Image (cartoon, rainbow, N blue to C red; front, side, top):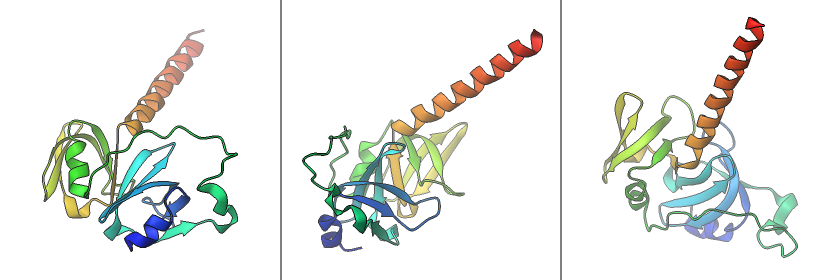
Length: 167
């Protein structure tokens, strides 16, 4: 993917890849030589390595999405401003991260170390080392809170069901 193409899409809503677990739709926030940043409300900031992206889709029915002065501005959190993907990984140390969006290579946990060749993540009772080259995308922070809310809701539902059974 050429950086000039990405630069032309800055501020627009795009879909990364056509489908599958890595595909996401969001606003293109920043572009660098080896990665770009997409924001969506469910996943937060997603950092994609350019070399792993197969396609980008722009919905031509909504070409005014980049700078519409009448549009209500949405709050977009600050992203990590780094010149290269390895620097992004190093800035994420000691944060909850999700590496890759889905499939068998998805890893969630606390990133404890990042080198030029691999990252180390504590995921439950496991220490997982992932080669940097095989990281398609990464996000941090926001996703864990959503998972905790789902777990809390499940626990509340179980408790409510127990209480109803005891009546």
